[in-house]
Image (cartoon, rainbow over all chains, first blue to last red; front, side, top):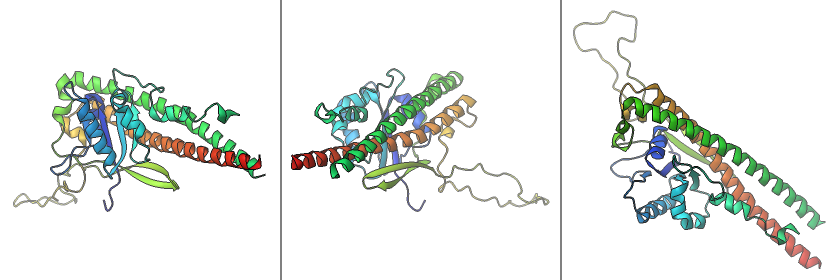
Amino acid sequence: MAERGKLITVMGDEDTVTRFLLGGIGELNKNCHPNFLVMEKDTTIHEIEDTFWQFLNQDDIGIILINQYIAEMVRQALDAHQHTIPTVLETPSKEHPYDATKDSILRRARGMFTAEDLH
Amino acid sequence: MAALDLRAELDSLLLQLLGDLEELEGKRAVLNARVEEGWLSLAKARYAMGTKSVGPLQYASHMEPQVCLQASEAQEGLQKFKVVRSGVHAPEEVGPREAALRRRKGPTKTPEPQSSEAPRDPLNWFGILVPHSLRQAQASFRDGLQLAADIASLQNRIDWGRSQLRGLQEKLKQLELGAA
């Protein structure tokens, strides 16, 4: 490939990461960090935040797929992220179905109108 | 008149935003359905192969992405994504290529597999003969990736529309204050 496109990264539980890696988005070699994070029982919030910030600051990432329950742990960082790239996409997990009321993008869209805007 | 034009522009932008939000909701529902299909297929594959046979322990130590994103800028500040698939590692062809007699003596020249060029199919991490349910899971998740790119593009459009809307509302306020 003359110019490689942007990567898709994934942060989620074992099932979520396995399924997206099966789809062919995984990158892992001696020089690079993996473009995925598997959430395990002993994964700390600090590690999740560090990985999230790392993905946000990488130039070669286009989309960050993140389980919504993990997105809740880094909600502040997510809400502060205003750039178009990388785009953060919240996905459901087996134990936590998708809740549109928690999605950052939809919450911003709901907050488009204030009382004075409607006059 | 300027205020009227602005209001018309605002209305049209608002209608577009509402349409985008509706489309986003529809695509989300489809993505969730694909994901659920994939989970079911993954569960069937685990049942066939063993619980620990489909998981992080089987991930390759070296991975190259088969799927990448092409980002294009449709308008200023508006990014659109498209999923691009690179070539999959083709199966090695065994046997003579031409309809001719094979030489039984001496080594036959078979082409070297181009392993450095095409990324390896992640399905191979889990074995050579994987159950059909795992292939189905892979197909579901591949469809899911294209949907994810579409949803990401829509989210960007909604964000962009939102900022445009705010800008127009500010302009309108300024105009109305100036007229008053």
